[in-house]
Length: 346
Image (cartoon, rainbow, N blue to C red):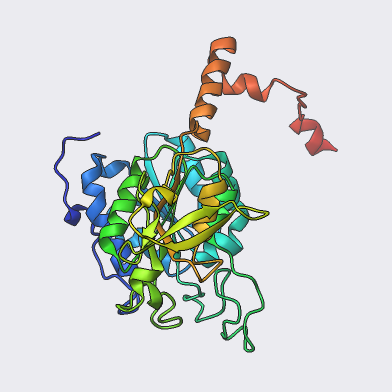
């Protein structure tokens, strides 16, 4: 930790920010730069890692250490940075295409290992950098340059994916709601382990209005379910709520009117180890449009991190066998001696 007084300006890199005017990425960048000074971490201990895509220009605009890596491989580089220096605060920036298509395999293993990384996935439901092809999160029927008659793919729900992979912190927020986004970023920063945040981000050039229903005055109250630990799942100005109906053959979630008795509604508990309820909550509004979409921290559980366990093993090995020498390791197995004189003669 540091006693140095940091401000937002300390995290603003020199040079122009080169995103399209009106892009939601500007809001995310500003929110991150606003939050970091409040975390009590030294500026030189921050590292931002990205893959490829519009979102992945992020490290250029942060006055911190960082890497702009290759497509889909940000999780591997970020994991390596954290293992090499576990004292660093490592943040990974990716998009729905970079993180869930080209890099889906790497993202999955990063989360199941519970690497101590903060992961921001910018979801604009389109490939923006390559000019508007449908992405893993594009809705079924989406007409794009690569789906002229509408996409026939079932979209990936990033939150469901993260929970299924075992991520210990899973949240959703929106670039159009900076206050909520900053609160979510602070919660992620405080978490020990993989903190995965899906951020709804509008691409006003190639997919404008993808998240309009969450913003429009006439629909936003009914479409957003803002989560608070210990609070009932209420929305639409608390006029409606979500209950678990067990009267049928299978339990199911239902929306019912709030008549004043909130005891019947599900109370949000992100700290439960079971993934069942977080998974169901994460699907609301995405898998079934009759529900609002959950915004906020959906899951947050404590579990040993990969880097912690790795260093425990290393310390135990040193305790049992001593520090060791690289030369001893090199010569520990079969060794061949090449006689350069005989080789040259032959």
